Length: 315
Ligand SMILES: Cc1cc2nc3c(=O)[nH]c(=O)nc-3n(C[C@H](O)[C@H](O)[C@H](O)COP(=O)(O)OP(=O)(O)OC[C@H]3O[C@@H](n4cnc5c(N)ncnc54)[C@H](O)[C@@H]3O)c2cc1C
Image 1 (cartoon, rainbow, N blue to C red):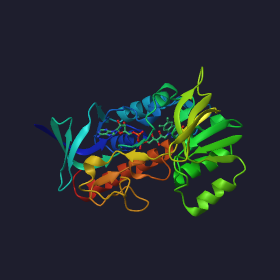
Image 2 (image 1 turned 135 degrees about the vertical axis):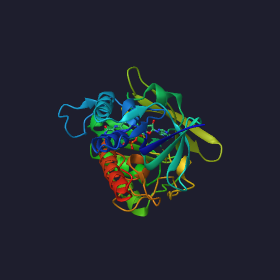
Image 3 (image 1 turned 90 degrees about the horizontal axis):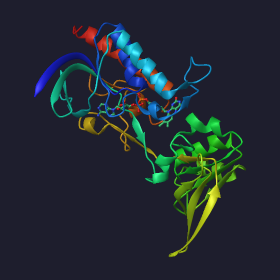
Image 4 (image 1 turned 45 degrees about the vertical axis):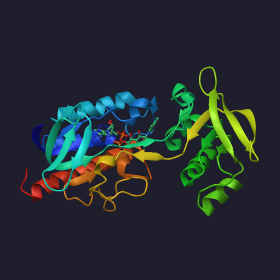
């Protein structure tokens, strides 16, 4: 297997990875960044981004990511195709294997591999992606002002998303598979008592319909042990809130993660428990998961990497 030594390896090409590349590039560290399966990250599958500061008219997700990439390249970042397939963080230089065929020996590593939203697995979720299906209320709720939406899920996140959307939409349906909510008591009370939210217990969404976007959801309501009722509910937006999967599997033997898989860092910093290894963006953020917060933590990780290299005479 071929090997290559680098001062700073960045894994992932979302807002966190590209921002880390801009900062480490400008610090003259010559970062190497591997893009992974989704060059540009999650924003490349959305249409309009209206909440990234600096774009008063909004910007398309692909354009924003292309701009960030160009900005990183301008300062010398070496951006490559490839997936990190395994990692050995037991000692420095850290060994990251790319595509099972090449080992990068890195003095510092910035992990910015994101977290993937979970979907129900319905074909219609793909069909209506960006046309009424969303996994992020903060990102897309604004497009559904005074409209009717459904949120799928029964945990704290689903309740939070439902409450957020209830401040914008005319009516929110919370579709819950079980006969109860898993959320904390306080969240349950807020949802149940909210005048704009109706909870549909023991309901499953089994499909979506609509001509040029989502116009409704096909529901199945369980009635007792074996009986069920099928009906259609008109909605304009369908929000998934059934969790995310942080892309942290290959690092788990060396880093602390929470029960879901989010990498745990020292509070307020991207420092992991391994010196010189930093985690930025959604992979370490169960709370905010926004492009701007990811970019912000990518910046912090880059500054940390530069300081670490400097303190260890590795520059
Ligand atoms: C449909 C949609 C719409 C959204 N809209 C908005 C919005 O309007 N505003 C907003 O602020 N946020 C929005 N978000 C959220 C935003 O996209 C994320 O918070 C942000 O992209 C997170 O950035 P990140 O850099 O942490 O990771 P991501 O953007 O998730 O990128 C992760 C990167 O890591 C790479 N990767 C993963 N595993 C590996 C590996 N093993 N090896 C190499 N590379 C790997 C992937 O290829 C990808 O490039 C939206 C999300 C979605 C899904």
